[in-house]
Image (cartoon, rainbow over all chains, first blue to last red; front, side, top):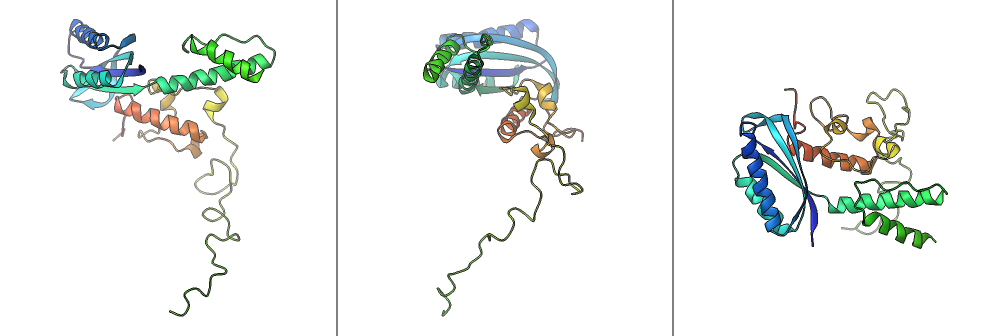
Amino acid sequence: MQRFYEVMFIVRPDVADEDADKLIANLEQTVTTGGGAIRSTEKLGRRKLAYQVRKFNEGNYVLLTIDADGALIAELERRLRVSEPVIKFITVRMDEEEKRLAKVRAIRATRKKLSAMPPEPAPAAAPAEAAPAATETATQASA
Amino acid sequence: MAEEGTTTTARPEGGPGRPSGPGGRPPGPGGPGGGRKFFRRKKVCKFCTEKIDAISYRDVRLLQGFVAERGKIVPRRLTGVCTTHQRRLSKAIKQARNIALLPFAARF
């Protein structure tokens, strides 16, 4: 059962860019070999930290959104913990949140339909297969 | 030993006569600290009116509007946020603090 997670971590500012890229590639490989799927990798760039972490005041933020199961996340976190360039990380589970958002958007879409206006297409963030399926079931329920 | 079960009748627990809450504070959000006026203008929840669904720990600019100067989370009676959104906001702020996007305690 694949769940959707967001993993954000901070890489030390004094490692070279290609080392950071290598690290990220390694982590991505861990995910794919463990049976997960990577949705996106975003480098948010160098930012000033709100407080000092391990004597650094700046860091390179990286955000990974992945589909994985619990065991794979445990493995990924273990790797982040032992890897020296990573100074902080946080894993947030997003699949329940996504379900809730999709439901809210579906309800909003049906409300717009009932008011006899052309329904606007669901925003790109919501997964494409969930929105029309949910709208269909909602309209069937209301009909 | 004698008066064990005799007075079972009127035992005022919270009392229907007593006003609820600590001493007659007027209802409504945002009562000022000094207690000058009764009703401040009704503050509405920013998230409900603007229909912001997801409060993510990543948008620091949004979260900073609800954090005081010293980094403390502002109570909802001052910001007018509704309960559900305040809970989500609080969770997001704590997540942002953990990833060093917001400080735990600032301005020492």
